[in-house]
Length: 241
Image (cartoon, rainbow, N blue to C red):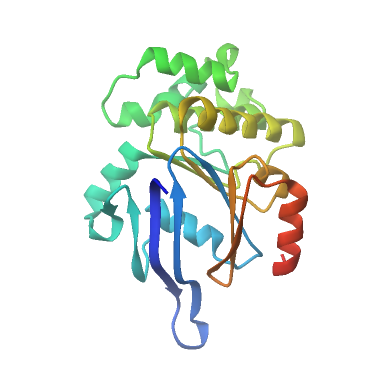
């Protein structure tokens, strides 16, 4: 497997003594470049912890996360911030848009912060892919939830990151908006070779992925390739999720 991200012997422990919780328990898993992977599991399985650690938003207690050949644990805070800015895109459930900026300004924000100029041809491709051409001058308050999340998806794509991490990206959307967003993510993988890793509790959302990795009690508990919603639900039932 040509891994964009790999996790080796990952351990994440919160608290001490009676409140000690092992969220990740000696987990080793890889996420293939140019593929769409979903992470699923029951509540408390460690899926959000895993996403935050592989994205460099949280650190492991033991083990290592590699983005490419770089172990995140070896980086200074400054180097880690730079790596996240240059190589990683994020799509969160809560959109995380700046209310005073219009859609175009929100989309180009990471590039602007880095002091770079957007590639206009790529910007146009992304905007047309997410279907926001006629909404670029609108502020978030003037957009529907689905449109706001597509702005967030465009923001993640426009800097051409090596990998996009998505945390329950369709969680706040109705079924139509959810399908539109997931369709955009699927196209980004199929047409642009993007790598996406998504945490979701939704079997229908996960069925858009090439592969589903299941977690239980901080360990991997199986996976599905070319999943369907029915097969995902069957597997989750076996985990008690």
